[in-house]
Length: 169
Image 1 (cartoon, rainbow, N blue to C red):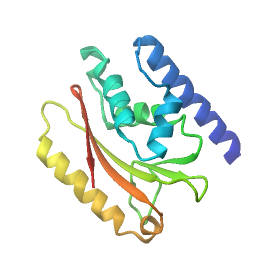
Image 2: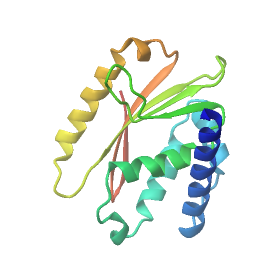
Image 3: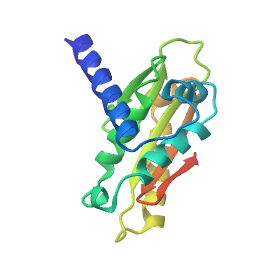
């Protein structure tokens, strides 16, 4: 049953990513698979640009009622092409829930990732959300299950209608 659920999840996120690109006429130099391959090798810039483009192409109407969950689904859809990673969305680790973990399917994968996401609305205090996100990441990094992940790079992604800020922690 777990395999069936994983296959459905991958198909759904791949479909969502392709639709997002098609409907918004993305003009990317690299394909989604090339972007996640660069991420695998430690170059996060192409993924950052792709996610920024996805967020910025949404209309003001799309942003109405937009929450961190919507931001997370878009991020997961773009990461769904990373077949060399196990993608874990909000795994429970000692009653804490990092938003996204990318763990290599093989020990040879040179980089693993943890992403904590925050969505800033106009009424929100950006600095307060940033501080909260950084504290959450530092808390996750103290967990034994997270400490045991080799070559882990941690990022706080702060999204708003204007784009996404990436902070490596």
